[in-house]
Amino acid sequence: MGRNPRHDKILSLLQNFRQISVADLTDRFGVSQVTIRKDLTLLEEQGLILRSHGSARLAQAINQLSTVATRKELYYDEKKRITDKALELIQEGDSVCIDASSTNLLLAEKMRSLPIRVVTNSLEIMNTLSQSSDLTLTTVGGSFRQEASSFIGPIAEDAIKQLQFDIAFIGATGITKEGEFLTHNTIEGKVKKAMLEASQRKVILADSSKFEARSFSKFAHAENVDILITDNKFTEAELFRDLGIEVITV
Image 1: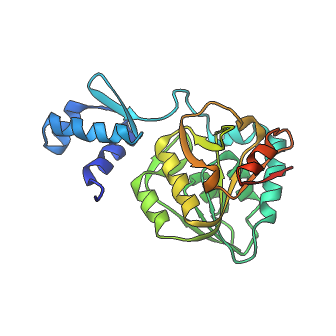
Image 2: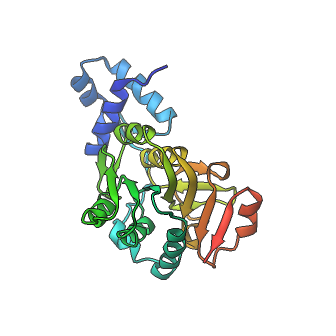
């Protein structure tokens, strides 16, 4: 069954307005409240929205996410070592996908002189790499999420699904002992998932503070990931190796 275009439009509205009422959606689309409620029920079942008191909002963590630039300074030494190691995995001519994460922003700063193709959904990474004459930069569009400085939603997902990458570097805000990788926002998680699926080598970059950190939405399991690069304070390397992931600690 194909995707209902109205569902995509509802998600885009929620991305812009954060919360919107059933009555407002009914007026905008010229359909009955029964139809809108059915739409919202389907979107809620997919984990994309949360409903309350005749309205809906995007499904995401309750705590507001700090900016990418601010988060880049947290655990900076660990992220520096992680991105130094990640850089070693990139070969000349590679097509590299990097998502909007604070660790990837630091990685992007180290990629400026590489003769590679980079695809990203991050506005900050785009700005970081835009003046480089050595690499080829491609960005995906979509709905802009200010907290993560990222483009997400169906437009971003569809663009990624048309591409293939040699390697993807994806950030995570939480990792569970079951080998699940989490993010704050369900719709952003769908973009991360699409990036992993489009890549030959699938790499998660996450410092050890992300282990068992509370987050909202699962975007990958151990079977969807090839490599985890983390710092040497991560104590569950053998557990994750048993799950089939190559764990590199730095």
